[in-house]
Amino acid sequence: MLTIHGVPLSVHTRKAIVTAILKKIDYTFEVVIPVMPGNPPANWGTLSPTGLIPVMQDGDFTLADSTAICLYLERKQPAPPILPADIRDYARVLWFDAYAGGTIFRHVVHPLFAQTIVGPHIRNVPTDKAVVDDVLTNVQPKILGYLERQIGGRFLVGNAMTLADIAIASNFIVYQYVGFEIDAARYPNLANYLRGIVATAPFQQALADERPFVDQMGLKRDFLSAA
Image (cartoon, rainbow, N blue to C red; front, side, top):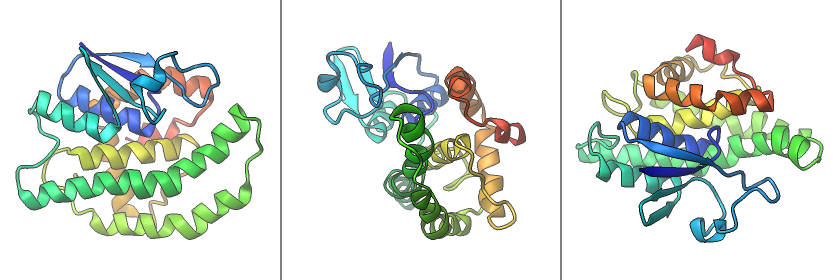
């Protein structure tokens, strides 16, 4: 059986978990919180060369990086696919996955999470309001505006859930956990799309499993009632 190491509410860990759930691949979960001193296991440097989560173990095979894990699971259990057969749709899914991790997470979700959760609650460093304001005022509108224009239906690419949807929605779950909201008047397509993806069975199961961590940290969950 697979083992996934990480934190369930992590953007990247959730990608691997939702993919496994979607494909009905059984897995066990081991909590690893790299930002907590003394938390990672002694062999964490071997399991995760970068020190980051998630990590997957499948027998004697170990793999770090959420996208690599999802692509491994795609080959392990091809149905239902998270990558389309059409060459252009396939490329667009990979693009949205890269955009989710390299742009949305790096420039929006990570700094907001770091400033509102990690800094004040874990490292005892006060929130830098200037950083938060810069993200919300100067960085976020371009990203949300781009996504608003890309959404033309229930899914980002094609007519079924793909890695693109898993990666994008996972970011905005954390974004809303820490108290920020998608302006449905300004970004109606994005807001409706995210509600629909979060309402799918794989996401609902993943969110139910991670609820104890969310409640323990006092994160917001009211946005889920609209899903």
